[in-house]
Image (cartoon, rainbow, N blue to C red; front, side):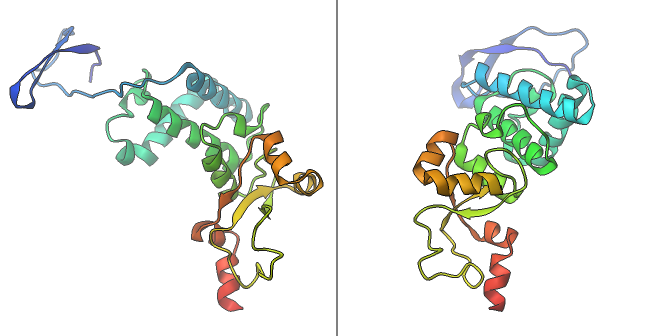
Length: 223
């Protein structure tokens, strides 16, 4: 497959489109057209991707380019049905749309959380969506501030401490976040509002997947 850029020259009746492009030598008569999102990847997203890939490369011992190729291939295998054709540019090393870049950043962050990759900057600084980052950190039981091993913490105003027992009721919908012992103590020391403002983080509503990850559904069932 050969890749070349083009542009729409004219929109014709019946949903047909006239495209103007350069024709490389040796091409077949039939071509595949991939539409790109009008909102292209932002410079900030590009910087985040290169930074996280660099952290993973340093941790793994691979050259940055080899790490990027491997991570991109895995990302495409996991998300190709959801992304359909919008991810082709990533595979080819070209630009990509803003939405695909956001998903790719989420994938890279989840990789770091799952594998305990040490990073020079807190991972939440790379996240486009803080709530989705908190959810991923919960799934991998990593402190959303420092990345160390963490337990689930119930945010201020949760049902815990108001007559509910976490061992007999999973508290679906309760606001939770993963914190290590050090940051858990700091949360209680300075208060939830100050803590979330300081670390630019957010608690998220617990769902059945999170409850199951921490064994709460099983405890409630057996109680």
